[in-house]
Length: 97
Image (cartoon, rainbow, N blue to C red; front, side, top):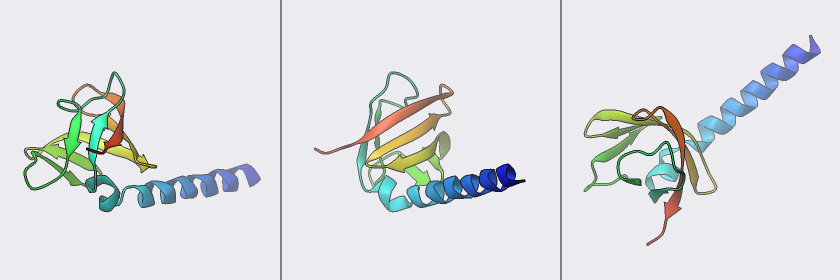
């Protein structure tokens, strides 16, 4: 019984961290550069803005209205994305020009 309660508490904690880490401000405030060899979306650069084809609608990344990725985690200016294009995880880091 103790183990089940501990698992539920741990699951709730992870869910809370997940929900807090995906605020639109964290994701849309930066340009993102792909840093791993797999799990990329498009050309490897993501920018959410007026002149961009990409948009963020929690938790989906859309390109021209079509879903291309799911953001799993965003913290410390790194973002973990599941690419729906190649069915792999990819890591992005904020890109400061």
